[in-house]
Image (cartoon, rainbow, N blue to C red; front, side, top):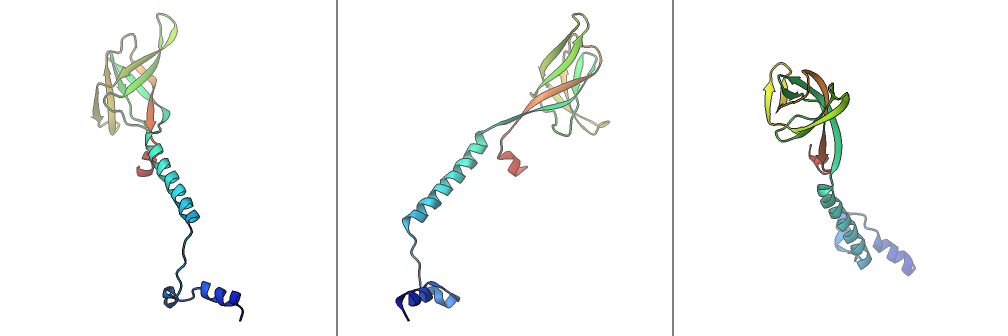
Length: 146
């Protein structure tokens, strides 16, 4: 047998008993590749916790007695201090306007089986149903845990 065949037989481990007979030594270039991949993975995880994805979520606003009631949607539940924009038509100036306001309180409404946000002081808006939206900010890492 030549030296190449003997080396090839020693390089192949065929059973667990052969583990003691041959120990392969790793070279430094493999450790550098492993470290680079590990640093890249940790960087992606840390970066995804700080990066924000902003999306516009539309819902319905109902105006009654100078109060705005923000209805829940499948995409978002109203929360206290959440900024909503209600789009309405101003009859006096014949112009579409936006009413930006933060939600004051959130109450559970048994009729719709959900939480409704309430804003006081809807000046210049007639009673009725309007389109509303808010900007929601999410981090990519939050999608892994929801």
